[in-house]
Image: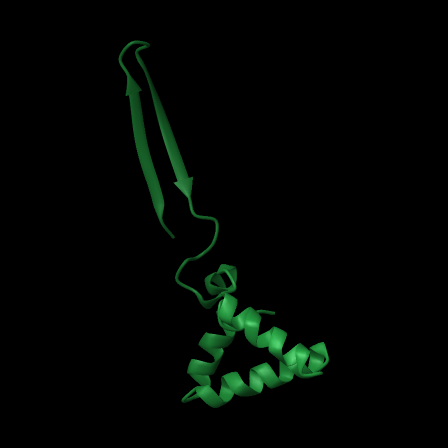
Amino acid sequence: MKIEKKKIVDEDYNSGIDVEWNHNHSIDSLHSLSFKDIPMNVTKTNTQMYASGLLPGAAHREFLRQLRSECQDDLEYHKRLSDRSEAPR
């Protein structure tokens, strides 16, 4: 967790302000990847699945099957599954 402290002093008013800011979630976890934007290539892949006649549930299962086949092991799969830019909900 990163805590920043900044001190601002204004000599005209002879006062000081301490501003403390704390990031509201861990940035070193897989959960932080779920806030990434979804790129156009992922949107296009899903759109093509729907256009081929798959219903949303079947398209999602097919998408996950393809994702798993691209991964070397379970760890890579779960990292990519956590990343919203690669595997949106």
